[in-house]
Length: 82
Image 1 (cartoon, rainbow, N blue to C red):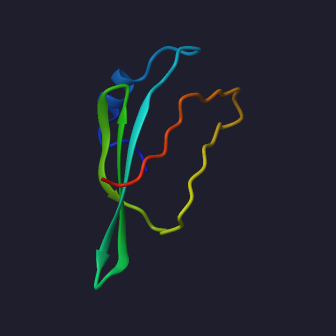
Image 2: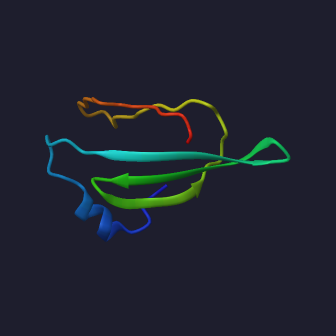
Image 3: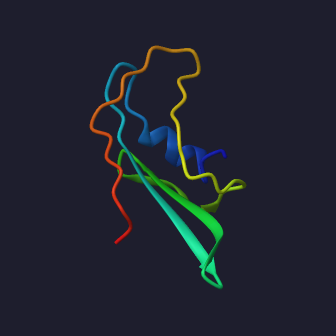
C-alpha cells in the first residue's frame, strides 16, 4: 500500500546510505474467538505513514524486501502483544 500521505512520507525518509527506522504494529482483531482482521500501523522515522490498514492475508509470518538494492537490517525485535 502506498503511504497515506506522500508529502509526509518524503519528509520521513533519511538520505541514501543512512539508517531508516520502522515501528510496525501488527494487530489481529478477533470475532467469536477466531482471527477476523489483521491491521497494520507503520511509523517511519517517527512519522506515522499507515494507520490500522487492513491486510488482505492473515498469514502468521512476515518478510522484508529490498527492490534489488543492497540492504542491511539490524535491531529487529518481534514482541508479543501486550
